[in-house]
Amino acid sequence: MLQKSAMERIMFYVQVHSIEMRNDLDDAELSTKNIINFYCQACRYSVTDERGLLKHIISEKHVERLHFLYKTKYIRECIKNNVEIQPSTILNPMRMYRDLNKIVCFGNSKYACSLCFENNIVGESVLIAHCADSKHAERKRGLPEILE
Image (cartoon, rainbow, N blue to C red; front, side):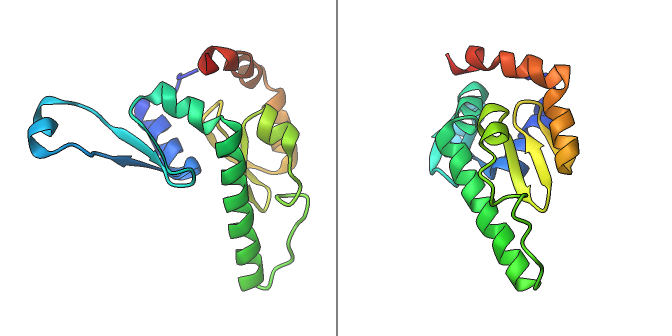
């Protein structure tokens, strides 16, 4: 599952899932311990290991909150810029993609895949092709392993 480099995965968590990296240790502990605290702003949730973070970002609660935040942001941007809201993009709950394939929708036909750590999926046809790809399907089959 974790086939991307650690830096690529951390950038994905920060950019797509609004994860903050915090260090809650004092100076004495900091010099002896190498601990990163991942903090999810949307859910107010902290975890210190990447496996726990993965479990969290693919959980239904987190995915729904993130979808709501991006949907709200997209609608506000459309109103601010006097642009028509594209209902097929984000107002549709997209449960098949969001819940089953762990896709994040930013609005305006822009997507990211939490299973593959892909952040540049543009267009619904590209999204459909991505979800049908064998690498994505393999990672999807590996989900139960992460969730145990």
